[in-house]
Amino acid sequence: MTDNYTELLDEIPHLIRAKAFSDSLSAAPLFSRVGQTLDPADRDLAERYVQNLGFPHIEQARLVHLAEALGAAEASGEDPDAWETEEQLRSFLHMEAMAQTSEEGANALLQLVSGQVSEVASAAVIEHFEHSPHYDEAAKNAMVGHVVQSAHCMALAILSNMDEEQPDHPFILRWSLFNRGRWPVGITGSSFNLF
Image (cartoon, rainbow, N blue to C red; front, top):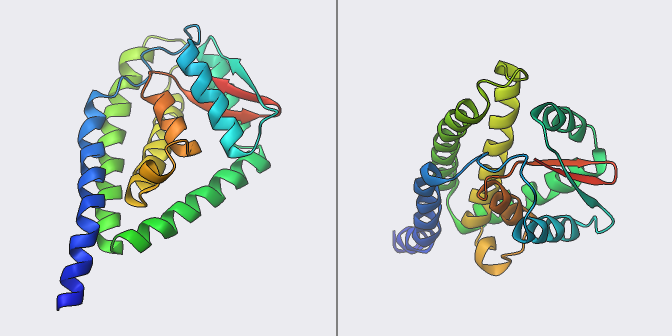
């Protein structure tokens, strides 16, 4: 009983911080700056993201229109190197999160984050793109899916304590871009596409 209680006390700080992240999602300015000129902070986050992901040769590419962003999103799923690298990082963070917290606690928080961010992202997509000629249900699903995936990875970073141990982790940097109103669409070829 004592061991179980001690383990529970050890995981509470991680769960509290993950819950705080979930609570903060309603204030995230999702998609509010898409298409705008990249400012120095955007460029810095993007540069550190590709460097820390292991692709220092990748250049930033600013996307201006929704059609460009949707095309880049579709193409980025076909880049095996970037996809595999991110999947390995995600798997590692998942294992680390499970080492820091119980599976039940982690899964409950991840589901909470997923539900919260999905709702917020859906509302943001409708607000910013509903009147675009390129907006449809598939476009909405693609954009919301990118946000949900990024928030999930950010929550894993919190649950694994990576946000404190390695604040320049690629998943933290990617979420920071979303949290600045950008859409970090993904890597295609030699470009990191940012809308």
